[in-house]
Length: 313
Length: 313
Image (spheres, each protein chain N blue to C red):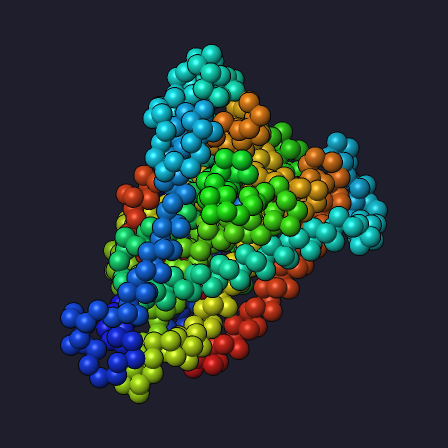
């Protein structure tokens, strides 16, 4: 291709840049590099950087998608802080994240430790990963069916053992825990494999030594595995918590935010404001808040991670 | 893999676990396997339930909701979904009778996932090469800038990206769906850069001495040598795109470009006879998940082993 025409240029740069080393300092391969990163740089500028800046701008406007954005300063934000539905969305989202993350992390660590101590089988790891491969939409639909009030299997079972049926998606108190558990089902295997990868880094002799000293498996878990796993858990939590805050698909497919406002999580509220109610500026302001929350959470977690790293050394 | 040598499986038995391994039945180990099996069953059961439901008639789902086997075994649900049943047949079996453009949505999903993945992996590989192998001023700063995009929650840029695509007149077109994913994602660049960094420089230097330019080195040396991680990245990205819901919901609601996830959401909202057509829905879900499941079983080992921290840390 164009190789022949471009290469001499680089070679020339190479020569002029030599200062007694075999590595070319200075400009180096700048010309070549520009060509290589050009598509990615365009993609980055157009679909990440530009919308990132524009997102802040839209949050300061009134914009109904049809006309042009109209600058209104911080009005959206003052309105937002008095918006009961916003606070409700925030509360509901936090409730979701707490249930989702706590359950998911406990189960994932349990699965990872069990696999670590029992088997290295790729088949088992593959089976555990299976729910993660299907979409949130499919996971939601399957559980929507399993948990159906009238003829869902789970309620059939509950009735069979003599309890009252539970309106999992139809009751304000149950909706969020139910959605959280559905997503735990989809993500726990993936999270377990992340933790499992972390466990592989703990050298076997640590356990041997502990075992020789008479430590039980249970004690070893609390005294060795968990402390050594801390930095990796922190990293896993950065990924899972930020993901969890952005729950949308499951809600959109099952409850649509209901009953009432019981499962109207942040991203669903943003979607409704922006796309069904056409208040795009207001939706942007909401997403600025979501961004700030996520950035804060990630920074705090990364700080914890750093503390953990010094521990390990 | 050194971890497999950890011998302390025999619960706290200090010295002799290695010898006892085969003979004694260890209560702790039995309990651990039992827990593992229960977790695997929870993971897999919903998949079985999809199959069981999809092969039943809608009527039998009401008469025998708790039967563990399909009742009135039938292919009717699949026929309904794939458009092989007449509207009358479909209605008689509990479907809506409306034409389901399943094949169209399947095609749309294939186009969307394949094109966005192919572009993303290719252009990200080019950029990753520039970040890993070329020398140019500001390289690490630009790389860091790209990485910060990992911190931005997708919804934050998706709102302005929606406006951009809308203003470009690309709503409900494949370019509109694909473009934001086509040129790069920070993760893909990061992932590939890690692998490129690990390739020995010697082969590259030798090729350079022979007069090979960077294009030649990239296509003839780097790409062939990183085949495994590139395929892994391709599969992971493809699965992600296939499962994507939010962006196609915003940009591709129209029939012409509607992908399977969005179509399933619509299908679920149709309640032809008071409740969703559960058998049809589960059949649709199965067919929608099938390509991914095939992909997974073909590359299970690669996918399972790719989940760790090589790509995250």
